[in-house]
Length: 456
Image (tube, rainbow, N blue to C red; front, side, top):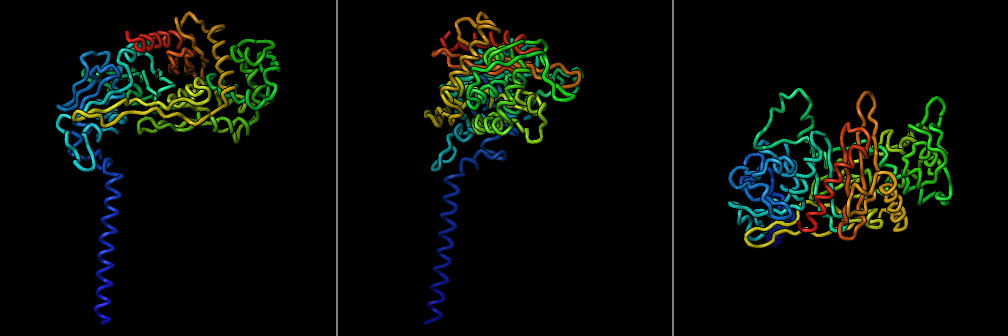
């Protein structure tokens, strides 16, 4: 009898182990099957280093890439160049990670039928506009950098250009290039780069000051061209005299912001940078961006002052900082950006993007006041005439890189028009003064965005 009981228990334990294993497999299958399908070695999905099927279009339905028989790019050479960093190249040096993350949807994968359309593949529609991308490429010319624009109400990225780039149908001798024209060409600067921000970081500092220094708008700050810290100093190119916070912001006065930094203090500034998330990584369609940096834990007083001006060891990622600007434009919270709009396969929609709103990063009152200050910058400094039909709010930056390198030119902001809810960032590497270099580029790109949104 004991022997029968023992065998019964052993059989029961065996059955339980089988059931447990089966349940574990079913759970893993339910939650991870789509990941297994798009594994880079899958013969059903990939042809070498790239997806082996499907079509990618821009927001208007213009075909950018057909992948079902090799890789057939757009017939337009400018479009091929301007969209390369989102579509990838034939050799796999540039990865189209955002598109690849939707491979299962393009194959029509589901848990019951598996892959049922891998031969032709589905159609992935991106939010970017080839028309705007091309305008951005022409405006950037031979300069290196990135320019991006997104809808801060919906999250749609209309433009995200990286330069330098090249024509995948006419690949240059990149390895043999000695001019430096193709340095960093395989890098998606919008997603993967981190830049010294320069004075566009004064947006962060101004937001912190408005929130934590009670009478900040009643104070004045006198600039004599230099604020000394022992043998070191924070300097301006000219003495701005006595200024309010708004005037100091418009003048981009380093000396005033050194004084403002003292009022904020290290702990507060660190706390606000964290709350605004400007140094955090951002995930766009499954791809994590580069992180920024803000660390003043060991900073001397002069270094802390420079950190509030956007120098010292400050770094920002363009995608993340653009999203921060979208949050300001949205009254303290904005839409999270995305570039894949929808995927259709087998006659049905297998994926459709949804707007996701960020957590609140600041109060509506602070966001509104920043908007006033940034709008004043354009009216009084940069020129409204550069942006016809648009109420642009912005801040320029000239980020010093040290040595004999020309500084990077930066420009960031948003549009207040209800019908054109756009936030933007422009980075021109070694471009010199921010507004002088960036405004003409941005003007052309925003005009193209406006035309696309108007249906032209």
